[in-house]
Every structure is written in structure tokens, then in C-alpha cells.
Length: 238
Image (cartoon, rainbow, N blue to C red; front, side, top):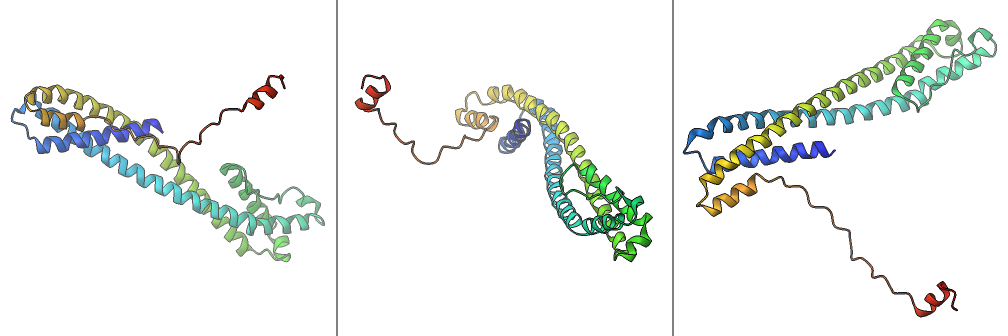
């Protein structure tokens, strides 16, 4: 969390530096290459941040969809298939252990593997299941929903990996932005050594502005001093 926050703060700082130079154009072009590099890195970093935000939103939406599918399957189709299969196993011993209940908890992988095993058992014993009210259409629906769940999980993993890689690149970019701002600092201190207002504006532009800590709500209640009677009881003199 701290690294992500610092990356955002560096990028915000670099954007303020860019705005400062827009307001104070270069007369001496010696720093132009540094400024051009700064512009390019800012644009790339902002693109990565936008992609990260989009990926985060997609991960959140995918997680909610997976949770809905898991609840629906475990309380509905998977539950029905498991119970019907277990009922059939009372008369057909060879079915024992094939129709295990799929838990709503547990890891994603366990849920997928358990669901696949249940669907496979239902297909393998389709005649028995159909005679008890679970036809191939219901099994197809369960498999289709499980496929959707698996696809969402795969997409979530891919988005996570993409965000990790983007975060590493963003860290490198913002570190370089901080270095460039430091290089421009000496240039501007010399440029504005006789212009205190411009120099103050420059110093404000290149500082990292950490958010102020939140204050506790309401005044702190005063601590009452113990009475003389309390003191006597505490030290055993009463």
C-alpha cells in the first residue's frame, strides 16, 4: 500500500513540475532534454495508472460475479444433483462417494474440481439421474455455470498478474521522475535565484505531499485524578 501511495505522490509531483514549466517556459534550452523525458514518462505513468484502475474495477466486478455463481450453484443445481445422487446411492452401492456435496467455502480450485467431479458423475450415470428428476438439461446448465465461474477465475488471475507487472513498471517510472525533478531543481534554483516568488512556487511544486493524518473525532475526555480515599485503598492504608 505504501509503495502504491508513494508512486501516486511522485506522479502528482511530476505533473505539478510539468505545469510549473508550462507557466515558466525555458529560455535556456539546456534542460530541454530532461523536460522532454519528464513529459514522456508522465504520459506513460498516467496510462498505467488508468489501466490499473480499470483492472481493479474489473477484478471487483468479476469477484462479485463469481460469488453470485458459487452461491447459486451450491444452493441450487449442485445441491440438487448431489442429493439426488446420494439418494440413488442408497440402492446402488456403486454410486457411493461419487456425489459429494460441493462446499460454498474453500478455495476457488477446490470448488472447481468438486463441481467438475459432480458433473462428471451425473453424466456417467445419466439414466439413473434422469429417472430421479435430474435430466441432461439440468446437468448442462450446471456445467455451463461452472464454466463461467472458471473463466472469471482465469480472467481474475490474468488481471492480477497484469497489475503486478504494471505496478513494477510504475515504480520504476516514478523513481525516474523523482530523479528528473531533482535534476531540474538545481537548474531552477539557479534560474530563479533573484525571483523568490517563482523559487517558492518551484519548491512547492516538487515536494511530495503526503496526506495529513486524520484527527480523532471529538475532544479527548479529561482524566480525573484519583481521590485521596482511592489512594488509601490502593496502598492498603485504609
